[in-house]
Length: 323
Image 1 (cartoon, rainbow, N blue to C red):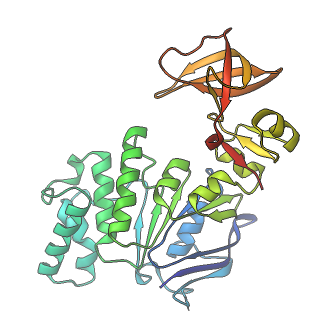
Image 2: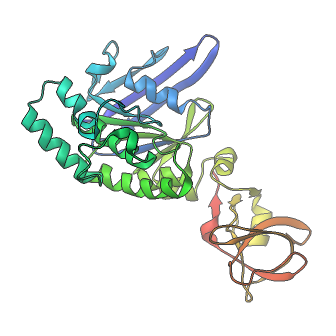
Image 3: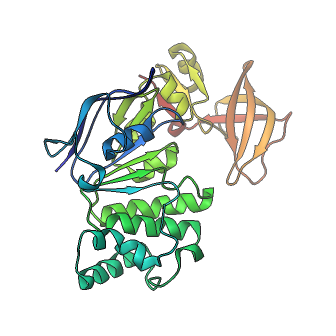
């Protein structure tokens, strides 16, 4: 079974939020829809869910056009940023809700609830009130509730964005494992690069209502389709082929991430340190190389200070080939 989005367009009056999007998701595949705020990615997800009427194009499942099929009959599971749990129900009641509405027997519901709470790391939480849970625990319950009826497709709209950075990173790893263990077919909307590359089998980059690139995470990261995509993916500087050849030894148009240059006493480049900012696991520098300013990284232990002259090496993992 598979999802197919063909030429999908969504308009609000004179504003086109989604413009002629084509996207396929295979059975058991996780696709991340990655883009900045306002690019139309959540609108696209809502149109797939049946929450937004398309102005053109089609959404089909396994070859069957879903036009006119209401949300509750599409067989899709939905997880939103805030989880949207029922505060008056306990954890088990929330997870079992969809199955109960579908008429599943109590014994089958109880078995499925236990199975899913084990899967999401909340075994023993059946009778806990959802209002007593942390934000991360609530999102795990929301995921279990969406998975409970065994949906054809799981749609997740910024499911981790309301959480703090450390918790978001951990839950992204957990969510990737959960989706694969559940064998879920999923479309995940996110603006976070790390989240997309952790979760997805393929990443679809979206900008101004259109999908600009689709590919495996490594392919998208290393070879962004254009300059705007490269900048969105963290390339603060873009070099033409001549400059790239001189600085990093690559004869192509490239984007440099902050990690493309690193302090190395044996490095071939000489630079003057202009600024220094401490990060969690590294020190970020602003350096001057032959009159040009670049970002570079240094280790936390004994980093150089502004005014120091340092040697730099090229880290090719921080370089993206554009186009």
